[in-house]
Image 1 (cartoon, rainbow, N blue to C red):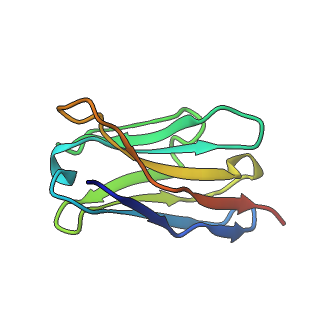
Image 2 (cartoon, rainbow, N blue to C red):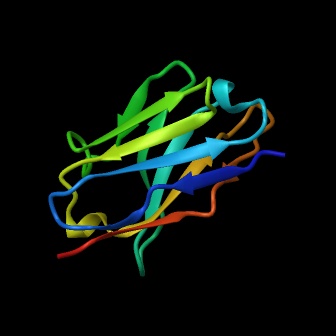
Length: 117
C-alpha cells in the first residue's frame, strides 16, 4: 500500500516562497510519475506540475517561471518550490503518484497554502 504525506504548507505574504514536500512509502516511487495538484474553494482540482520517472517536467501556465518540481528517488520524496507567490495560489495542494502500471492512482491528504498580506 502506498501512502503519500505532504508537508510545508502555511501562510505566506504575496511575493514570498514556500517549499512543499511529499514523502511516499512503498517501493514504486522511483518508477512512477509524480504530480502536484491544487484545489481552491469552489474550484476544481487542477494540475500544477508533474515530473516523470526520468525527470521530465511540465507546468500549468499560471505557475511557469515561478514554481519548480523536483524529485529525490533515494528519499522517495517529491518537492514543489514555489516562489513569487500570489493570492491566486491560495489552495489546498495535493501530491499524486501514478497512474501506475496497474492503473492505480494515489493521493496525499493535502496541505493548505494561503497567500495573504
